[in-house]
Image (cartoon, rainbow, N blue to C red; front, side, top):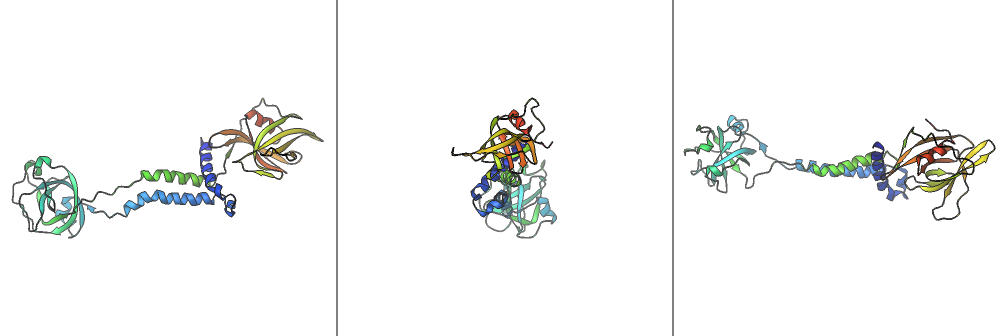
Length: 325
C-alpha cells in the first residue's frame, strides 16, 4: 500500500515535470511539482481565508446589554431569540417595533425596530436571529404581553435605555467552505511527497524464488530497463526493451545486456555487466497501475533498474551477481 501511494505521488510529480523535460528546469527535478503544490495550497486556503475577511456582528445575549457589558451605541450585534410584534410604539421614531426575547434567558428582552411589520400572532413566532446596531432610546412597554413572551406568566426584564435598529437583511453567520479545500490540499501533499520520490518507485524486498536456477550460457531473457546501459539511457517511467544473455568468459559466465531499439533497427552491441565490480538489489517497482518484479544493477558500465514479467525471471538473473541483502 505504501509503495502504491508513493507511486501515485511520484506519478503526479512526474506528470507536472514532464513538459519541462527539454528545458533547463529538468535539472531541478522536483521544482515544478513544488511550485504547483504551493499554488494548490494557496487555492486550498482561499475557501477558509476569504470568509474570514467578511465582517461579522458581535454575537451577544440580551443579558450582556442589560448588564452594560455591551452598551456602546453603534455596536453591531447579533441576537438569538423570538420577536413578538408590539401594537404600540414603545419609543419615539417611525418604524415597526417588536419585543425580542432572548433564546437562553426568556426573562431578558430588548426592543427592536425594523422597516417591515412584525407578526403579532404569538403562534407564528419562531426562534431565529436578528442583526442590527445598538442605539440609545427611552423605552417603555405598557401593553400586555402574550403568554409566549413570558416565563410562566412572569414578564421579562426589558432594556430601558437601549434598542436595536435592525438591518434590512439579517447578516448570516460566517460559514467556511472547507470541503472545497480537500481536493487541492490532498493534491498539494501528494505533489510535495512526489517531488522527493522518483517515479516509478523501487521498493527492496527479501522474498526470492529459491527454486529459480541461474541463467545458463546461451540463455536469453527479454526485459525492460530504465537507467544507463553503456551509452544508452532510458527513463524508468518510459522504459526501453533489453535482452539479457549469458556468455562464457575466461573466469566464468558473464551476464550481458543488449538494449533494443524502439524502431526495430540495428541493436547496439551487448554491454557486459559482470567482469568487474557489480552489485544489485532485488525488489519491486510500483507504478500507478501495476507492480512488477525489478532488479537494480550497478557496475562499471551499467547503472539501471531492470523490470521482469515474473519474479522467477528476476531471481534467475539476480543469482548471477552479488546481491545486497
